Image: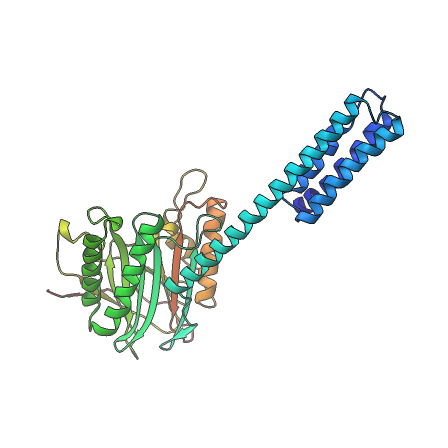
Length: 371
């Protein structure tokens, strides 16, 4: 509706100027309306339409003075020159706006290509599991930032990663590329999730030393790694300082997969080192694993209350992983009233199967792995 009004506004201004000039004494003029018309047209119309608007406005001023017999008076010539000058300025504004628009479209296309390269949309089905992924940027027309996700079918089963790189801008994007590259290699070669986590740690330390932009001293990446062994109803998780994954059962029961012991994020090995710990949970048919970044958990409403994924999702039943992600994204938007301040990366993985009756919470098994 607003776009329709803006596109009609130049014509409305010219008509208003004509009516005002014709219905008032000769001492009054509609020149301001005629000058405003091409300026309004400049950012919204094509070059030809802007030129036509300026021409009609100039012609209207000239015809009114011819009708009033004041064509050669100083006031008339001043008004005519003013409208001509403003029309020329409108053409210049139009050209600048169009050029900026083309550059923005080009930058947007590059950003989209970069996002597809770094965060390709995974297949709907990988290794017998149903997969859905979403990346929601907090800022309009922003595509990539420091959040990441990855899914890979490996000899050891389907392996997953969701992480959040500290910081913004190109430095964060560089770190995302490092983490994803290391994960894709390590997921194929390392027989354990602990080994994958240590590969990522070493990759960030190596790259941080080589490039100051990654901030070797303060930079870090929270990350959760998960693995679903082929043909197994088990789920293995290693959490490095990341928000806890959720396991949604088909009957509405929700489990928070909290680590038995908190661990430092990746990239903070200089502050302390201890063996990574993998935990196991049952992953029954029909259940959905939900992983997300802190853009979800740190979303606030107008009163400053944080979004609570377990509280919002407990007791709800979804038709599949796409439905889970759609519900979370829509709920966060309602919670923040569209005012989210951080990007969100979400990954949902579901085991196919029929719904099962409610079950008791599974006690995780903790395995220790020494370097």
